[in-house]
Length: 389
Image 1 (cartoon, helix red, strand yellow):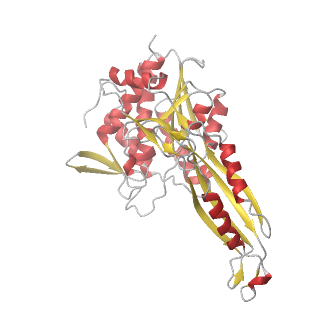
Image 2 (image 1 turned 120 degrees about the vertical axis):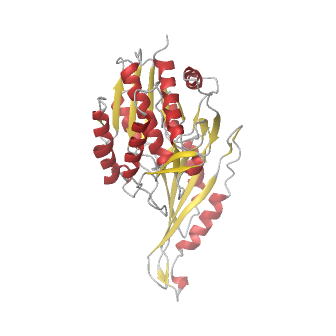
Image 3 (image 1 turned 30 degrees about the vertical axis):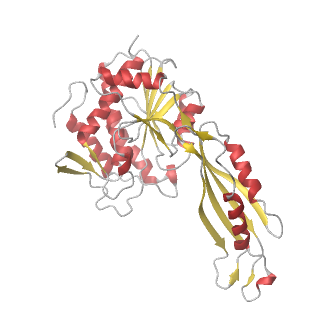
C-alpha cells in the first residue's frame, strides 16, 4: 500500500485507523446518541487518536467532538462532520473484526459501518491532519465527529451548531456516497397518531370501542392524502407511508382500547414540515366514538445546493488541485444533517468514499484506494476554500 506524498499521514495509518474504528462497536440502539458504546467509541477510540495526532479537541454537551483550526473567524469557514453511530451488526459475520480482504479488485477493509460512516471518518481525519501540518489556513476549519449517524434527527447537529456559535459557510456531511456529491436530498417528518377507544371482552365487542377499527380508518384517510402536488425536478414526488402500528392492552380476547400508528412523510426542498404535519393530523381526526391525538416526531429538513454554487466550485477545483476527477453528483431520497445546515444558511451536502450499495449489508466493505482518494478530495477542498486568495 504505497503512500501518497500529498497527505501528511501514511496509507497504512489510514487503514489502521479505519480498522480500529470498526473494531469498536458503536451501533444504533434505543438510547440513540446516549448509547454507551457510541459515547465510548468517541471517548476511548477517537479522542486518544486525535490527541496522538496533536489536534486540539473539545466535546460539547452531547459528547460530540470538535476540532477547530485556523483563524478564529467565521469567513471563510468550512466544516467536515463525520459520524460515530452505525447500523447494528444484524446478520453480518464478524462485523467488528476489521478484516483486510484481498480480491481481484484490490484490498478492502470489511466491517459494520465501514462503507457508510467509519471509512469516510478516517479519510476526513487524514485530510484534517494534513491541513493542520501543511496548509496555511486563512479561514476556519472545523472537524466534528457527531454522536449521531443512524438516528433520523438533527439533535447532535443542533448541539454542534450551538457549541460553535455560528454556522460554517460550507458543511461537508462526511458519509459514503461512492465519491459523489448529493446536490439535494429529501427531508422527513415522523408523525405519531394515537387512537383511543374502550376495551371490552371480545365475546361482547358491542360493549367496547375498537381502537383497531379506528386505526384502520385513520390509515385509510391519511394514506389518501395527495402528496404529489409539489414535484422536484430530480427527486420527483414526496412520499407518505405507514411504518408501524401497535395496539393495547397486550391481552388475549380483548377489544383494544389504544392503537398507535407511525407515519413517515418525506419532504422535498421547499416543503413546509408544519403544513405536512397539519395535513396528517386533520386527516387522522376521525371523530367519535374514538379520540385521536397526533404528535410530530423526529424531523430532518430537506437540502439542496446549486450545481454551480460555492460548495461545488470548492469541491471541483479542490479535486483538480489533487489531480482527481471532479466528483459526480446525485440526488438522495434519504435524509441526513445537510438539511439542517442548509436551513442555517450554509451550503451543505453529503460527500465521501464508500459505496451506498454497501450500507447495512451483510458484507460491508471499502476499498483502500477509495479511502486515500477520499482523503485527497477533502484535502483539496480545504486548500481551495480556506487557503486560496
